[in-house]
Length: 271
Image (cartoon, rainbow, N blue to C red; front, side, top):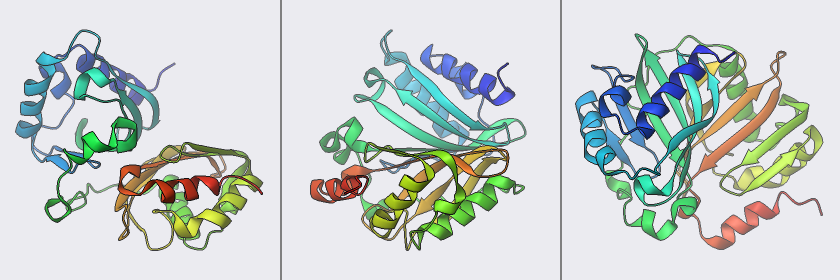
């Protein structure tokens, strides 16, 4: 039976796909809404600003346009949502991971993280906010009551600084880097990958953990870096004994040159 969070998000995305501005916006808090696109640096810091963008774009979407969730981790206090916007909505396919916070039963913070290479790097470059004008996504983070996901996220983030996070993963765990198109299965193989790659990954040494969402069995965290890829998100699914069963991360690969991406992807190969 679907959880309350699954039901809520499926209703939200059904309304969005139906181009129903009022029904979509009803899920957002009237007084505390903050919505941002982390890849482009676009921000809607109030309920009124967000409703205005719905009203501007939704009526023009063609009948074939769809926006839908593919994975939901967490509950109706905070969650990670994997989502897809088909190209008809914004001119290119967007496959995003969004950390989302609630208050009073409504959404108060939603940040879309995605890889602009999947959308079209050149097209995204013309839309991206200049770095010096990029908004602060972490200025007023919602308060939360820590759960098991907070402990695991902190332990994973700390271990990535040393390249030795393997002990946190379940035996049959899966690691996915959506930007690098990399999937690795199994505790040992994941450990070998991070021993080779962690020092060069944007969420490795030097990155900061900024915000955690989710519950005892799943959620994720936003991270920030001083390198060429300044931000991203990592989703985590946990076993009942708090081992990481699946780790999925996404960041904007359009900010790195091709050879750097290829070198990182090559770290997934055991040679």
